[in-house]
Image (cartoon, rainbow over all chains, first blue to last red):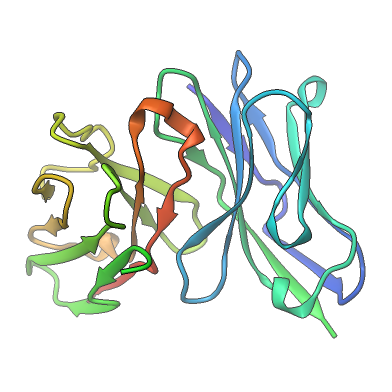
Length: 113
Length: 117
């Protein structure tokens, strides 16, 4: 079965600084990978996803993520964080043959002015 | 509506009572998922509906949990004899069609926050 780890429970950055949120997965074959964002009181919104092809994936709101098979990672990045990016971020992994993704426990992003 | 809606947005109940949570998916979305999100935890899959196929109930934590969906419309998640450990946010998501699997984006509702006293 697949699993996903988000090692950082909280990340604090200053507005305008760059951001990287870590995600590591465990799965024997090429996984499907996702990043979601959850703003306070809101449902989850898909930022980006990776199925195959180019390992650098562009998403909404200026986010990108890079799939690194050798490191079993799918880290989320943004070059310049805005105060409105403060939210909970979830990485998820899916396996072929199953349509139920496994979610990480989330990373809470705090943005200082 | 434009998105997935869930009701109620908040529910406080006493231990031992039954609760019903409702999800209205996006029109035309054949797939519907229920998840549970406990405080500080990731999303825990509960149940999955796809069209008229038998639902995937593999994530339901106990027989106190059940869900129904009529066709491709509203779904109801029922928790009987609620326990304090049932306190969580219950999220519903819908997507277009299972045939393309993960290429179909899941659209999430805002969730129902359940507190069992």
